Length: 412
Image (tube, rainbow, N blue to C red):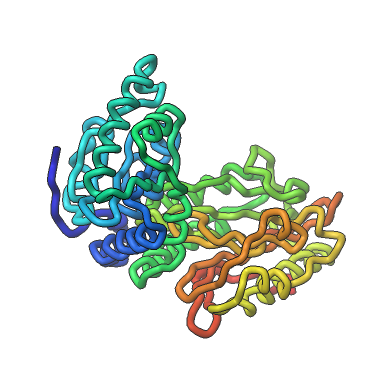
């Protein structure tokens, strides 16, 4: 068991190309933990038990092998509504939380996933469940309602056997994460500046004869060089692979006159998301009439929907007022028109009107939400499409763009 105090971790690597922006890390962490506890109290939960590494990072300010722990339940955190935050770290990693004032105690994690425990999964889960139940009983003061973001069957069964009631921890964390602090906005702006530096490098290097993968690798290189972390998807396509959307980068050789379209989905410094989409023309030629028309519609959709965003606007009202996608493009529509952004894609998700009855839900746009406004325009059976996306901050009167990389004015 280790006790730690301190004031700073997680500043991005500084290079001559991209000086690190000073983020007030202690205030960033305190705000996020406070948001989690507010949601726990609002839902009458004793505590949250977090396995998702993004949720652990939000609540505790700690990060360790984020992608690896997405599929190995090697670390978790116990966050009571009132009481000490306990981080359970994987073997040999307790020192990584040194200096993080939002973590009161670090303990060794009990592995009960099969890769680590093998045939001992059930017995390890019993030991694990007993310890977690004791924490709930100690700090819940009679409240045994535990908000869990994810939990594999052995562990869930053990907690239920011990009288703990399980509730949706993902809802708690998504609602907490939805409203950004000043420090979070600064961190997002830093991630976007890193992302846009990578985009400029991609644009400078892009030429006929390169593969899609070669172009995409430039963004990864720039992100890592400047203190970023990973990219969640590989959504970059060219030519006829731009329609339909949602294909990932390949070894296709890009050609002069192709559209090259991409969605960054970049996790930059401090773990914050830069989610920007652009579509470029490969080579020195001029866009065709069809390319200009597709691009013009995508740009119009982005700007029209951005103009609607303001505090107090209901999700359903936004869907009803949003730019109307022409019938020819409805079959290949993107999944959503707007979504939240923070440490990754976040609440809310606002779909097209065609999908609202099935997957939509009510809610309200609030000040200091960070949102991404999406557009994909590609006709059913068409040979090309255009993907655009702008990341914005909701202000008291509307919204402002956080991403500043220019659109292709010559297309219009």
